[in-house]
Length: 200
Image (cartoon, rainbow, N blue to C red; front, side, top):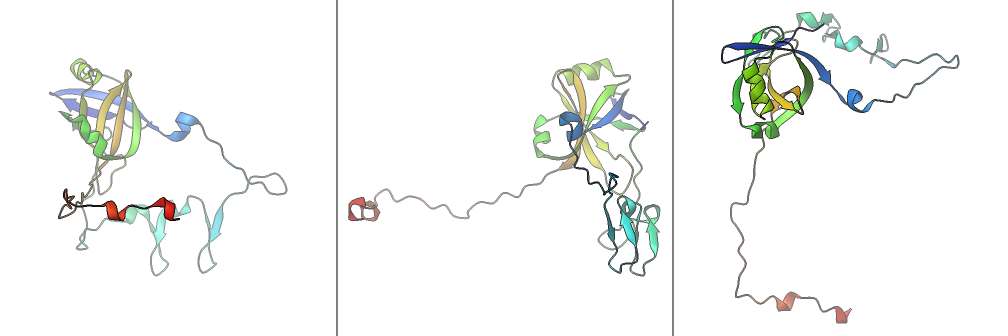
């Protein structure tokens, strides 16, 4: 079982067990099965470009081949910044207390590109924090599920008595507008531009 999400607010710690919420859990799913002549399920696979390797589903998630065709497992990969320097590895935040920020403006959720949603099961919830959440307040904390080279933001919310963590990154929008505004000429006569449908 995954480590819990632990947050602190006002010096008091709260713990949540969590489960990822996806479309299959909400709506169910259907899957098309491809069978061979013996009624056995077929599995997807593809050949490498040189035709020497048969790659099955899941194999590419374990590592990569470099330009010299040497196998590099994921555990040996490192993140690099724009200058090619190694980035510091960020450990998972699961099981480690994270400080809650807030209450924050609920409008921040509208600018969040949500990547994951987790249903939370309180396991030692601060009564004061519970009251704030049930009152519609929103809190924010740093989240990193597996560890890596980047963190995301998680928003702790309550809806209908259930608790959720919405995880993602802020979506930045660049607003554009005309440099000059075209104003209507109130003294102009546009009658000459009107169509006369009797001429057709």
